[in-house]
Image (cartoon, rainbow, N blue to C red; front, side, top):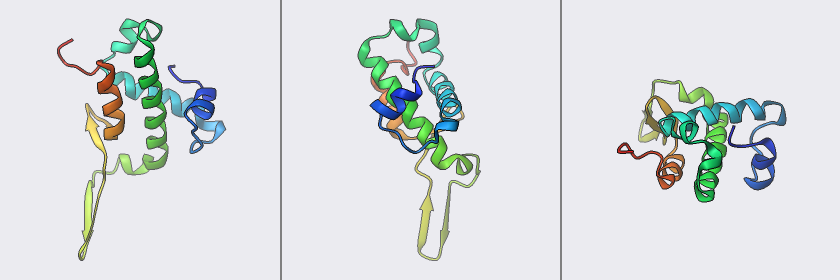
Length: 119
């Protein structure tokens, strides 16, 4: 795992996920991040990455964990938007390779260089 519960709480400042569920939620988020980076973190080894890349990955994991916590049930919903009268609601998520996430998470991972399809 790329993030500990201590990092999530103390460095990231996360408060959304309960302590009892935190390890599992972070593990699931790490799996999502691995998928979004095409398994490159595992292949290279997290400790072999540059410190800036490690920081971005840790932040992305925490953001993904909170996103999954906050919108978990809605993520598997096939409805992406709906409207009632003049009011319209759209989900602001991004789907990459079957993983639902936010543009902020994708941006952090893009900055690591590990999402480039040319590598």
